[in-house]
Image (cartoon, rainbow, N blue to C red):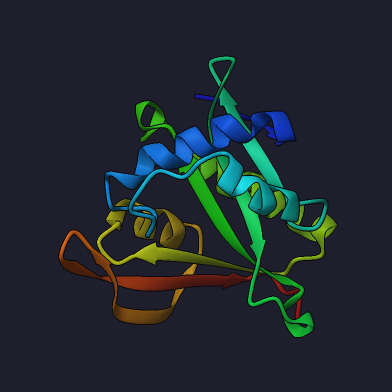
Length: 166
């Protein structure tokens, strides 16, 4: 399945939030435990711009996911490092869209002046860990039992990759 990527606009926020909220119940992707409102995500959306964009993933002529970059740690020395997040509608899992999203973002890095990507992934989310490892991301950190979801403690893994030309 071939994806097209398009910069998200304010009018797309309700679809972005709906896809995000769909993932909450799985306890695989996000540490949010309850659905978020569109209003609660407006400031987050506005914080994304030219430097740290959000893109829609479009397949079958409809929005089936999104991929975004977030600043890491908010300090000047980290301005070339970003966290990548990918959220895909459950009906479109295992169709190669996550791989296409990573490929697309990597193509944008030079223009965005980003040379390091981080992915924060739950330790029990083996599909995502495998996807990022397959794309050259290495295990850079392990935060044991930092999330409490449904009375279960979950680990958070930090995967990272440098795209530096040294």
